Image (cartoon, rainbow, N blue to C red; front, side, top):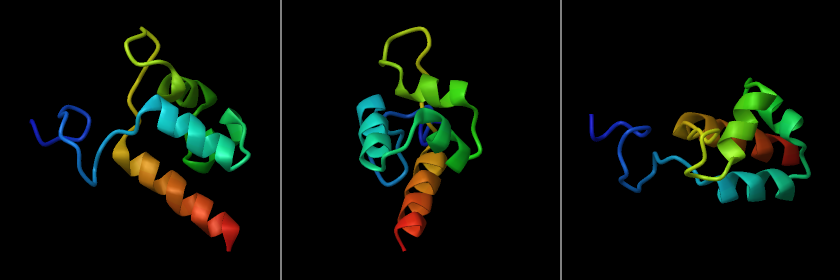
Length: 79
C-alpha cells in the first residue's frame, strides 16, 4: 500500500501535514487546540497527537482528508 497517504512518504496533493504546519495554521486562525479539533470532529487528544513532535511516542499523523477539511472550514469561517 505504498500509495496510501498514511503509509507512504510521497509528497503530493494527498499528504500528511507536518506538526509545525498544523500548529502554524491553527495559531494563524486564532484557534485553541480544542476549537480546532471540534472543527474536524476530533478529540482534543487527537489534535494534541497531531501537533506532537515527530519521533515522539505521542505523535500521530493527521490524515490528509482531515487536513483538507480543516482548511475548508477555515475558509468558510472567513466568508
